[in-house]
Picture 1 (cartoon, helix red, strand yellow):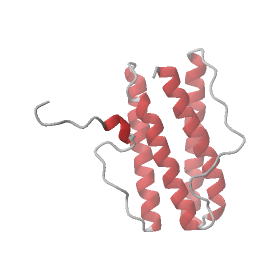
Picture 2 (cartoon, one colour):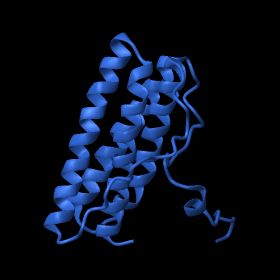
Picture 3 (cartoon, helix red, strand yellow):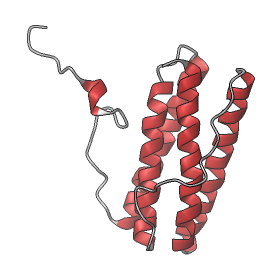
Picture 4 (cartoon, helix red, strand yellow):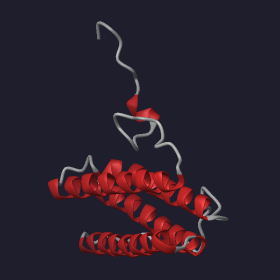
Length: 154
């Protein structure tokens, strides 16, 4: 995947995160709601930065969808936090491809974005008392890219 396509995938994930944080914020109160608002703003800023980067490359940035299918329906504070963690997990996956870009600035952007998203996902899960999820040496990488598995003697 080329850099523009990888940037587009990251932008699409940021669009979804902005939408999702808008949906989950109403189910939170206090500090969690303040955190969600700050992250909504952060994702909007990241979306805008990706849009500007794509425009500078002469590409037409992907538009946000009118509506997104959320992986978790936010019906309570716990499910809202679960949704936030799922949105952050999706961002890690979206930025993985960008980490393979030939441009060092894009690799740095991707690495930082993945690290921040993974940290946010962990904090959202901790807020709900949920386990941190399966340990993975390469979080966000789909299983297909991790195969074929090495065999002895290869």
